[in-house]
Structures are given as C-alpha cells and as structure tokens.
Length: 384
Image (tube, rainbow, N blue to C red; front, side, top):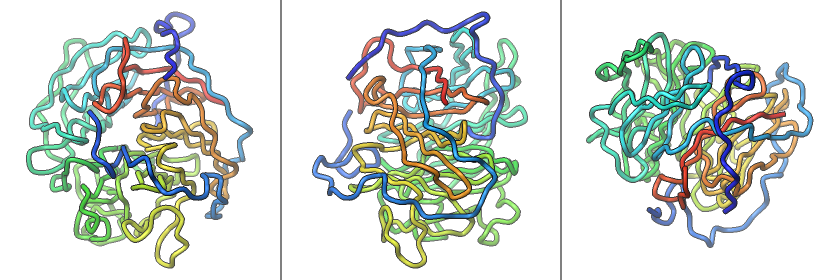
C-alpha cells in the first residue's frame, strides 16, 4: 500500500474557508465490509444507469482530486465526522467511545469526553455524528440495541458534552451490519442509515428499524410526510446503509454494502423498496428500485458519501479508493471514476465543506486495516 509523505496542517493564508452543509482484526466472510475472495464476477460499475426525475444541475466535466494536506493524524478507529459552526470538526472513535474536537485550521485535537452507554464490538460502537442547534447527535451501539442520542454542547473553550438524551431507540444491533450514518437533510429532518444485522429478513419487515433509511424530527418522532403513518421508516429493503448525502436538487443518495457481488449507490425515494435480500445490485425486478451505480465488492465496500461539484464522492473501505459519480437531471451523467487508489488505505468518511473542498477520514485502525505511522488521518481534498 502506498503511503505519501504526510503534509502538515495548512495554516494562515492557506487555511481552508469552511461553509456548513446539509450532509454531512479481520472480519468473518460475508460480513458488511469483508467478503470471500471468490466473489462471483459479473458486469462492471459502468453498466448503464436508469433515468429518473429531471433536475436542474448541469452535467459536470471530468473530475480530479488533489490532496491539499493532512489536517490531523493519530486518530484511533475514527468513524463519524461533523462540522461545527465556524469550521472546527468533531470526530468519533468507534472503539474508544470518545468524541474529539479538531481545529479546522491547525488540526489541534481537544478531547470532549467518552460517551456513556456505548458498547463497542465488531462493527458496532460510537458511529455517526451530526450537529444541530447546540446539540451533538450520535448513532451508537448500546448493550441492547443501536440508538440515536443527543448531547448538549456549547462549543466554547473548556466545554464538554452533556449527558446523552435518547432520540430513537430499538434499532437492531449485531456484530456486523449496524449501519450508523446520521445527517440532517435540507428539510431539517434527521435521517439515519441502518443495517439488518445479518438477519436478512429485517430488511423487508417494515415494522423493524433494521435495513432501512429512517427519517425523523430532531426529537426522534416520525417526520411529517413519512410514507408509513406513525413510523420513522422512510425506505426499506437495504442491507447496510452507511452513506447519506443530498445533491443540489435536494435528492437523497445512499451508499450500501452488498454481500458477495454488488455494492450500491441508490437514489432514495419515500416508501421505496431496494430489494434486499431478494435482490443485490441491478435485478430489474418489479417492485424493487435498482441502484444508480454498482461496484464489485472488492472495488468499493462504501461507507461515507458527500456531494460536491456536481458529483457524489464515495469513500471505499475494502476498495481503498475515493469514487466519483457525476450527476445530472438523468440521475447519473457519466461513468464512476476512482481516485487515490491504495494511496491512503481504507477510507471511511467523506464530508463536504462547501465549494470544492472535502474532508476525508482514513480508517486503517479499525482492526481490518494495516496501520502505519500516523494513522488514522483527516485529509484535506480539493475536487474538480
């Protein structure tokens, strides 16, 4: 695996101007992030994409990614990333159960404390983060379930996280397939991607919160306009959703782990069924929504995604690369492109900060990587 010379954090005139946005050991064979080496071969990710609802964004030109520097390093099992007003970052440690504040200019780290009630294990622990109106929201694995909590945080010098308050409980937990990404959408509602914990039947069970995209108020109640009355379930038939982002037209996109054949990027619609476990990848079956893009599992294992410069940018774990999927009103305007392949190891989270800037979190210390000196890192990216 290639390891570039680590660049020190950029400061002074070279510091990035950040703008807040909406989005935010080995595994057993067949788990969400590692699969058998004998995965079935089939068509590549370049298969034609279906057309969809017209939008207003123009098709982007060919893309390019530049690593502008390293903001910080020495992170352990980093997972969730959220931006505070003013441009500093919060990062969660899945296994250490902690939240750390990162200075968005210098990369200086300030621990904010351990989140009570987190029970790490397998793919579970302290996962996604989101920030809203003086609250820090966290998706975490507890002793009995996965749940979303929120903690008060003033953001001033010396401030620490307040005690966690439950927002939503009862999300199924497992050693694998815990989902974990949360983000506030342009409608002000809180969205969460969940997994089916390896119990495949949960994905099609609309009474279960496993294998779903959820939509709720900031207090955890079913959001107005949800497709199933009295329920936070927004879409179903998912295997393990860990990436959520909205494009310029306000459409919701989700990245999803496949099993042995296809990882997926889906355009998510209210009440839609995405097929798992009856379908993996493009099945063309009535009643199921096919993915807009798909990848062989060795090329992706997608976790976080972000929208910037007319494209979805998708972090790959097993694939160890950053994928770009150009979008237009026809859902996808070009073929997916891969960047940074093998340069920084496993990639967990990507966060848009406005304009052409992204933050990218590496994930070599999650027990499945091969960590080197300085791992893990938050990288500054410039995209075109």
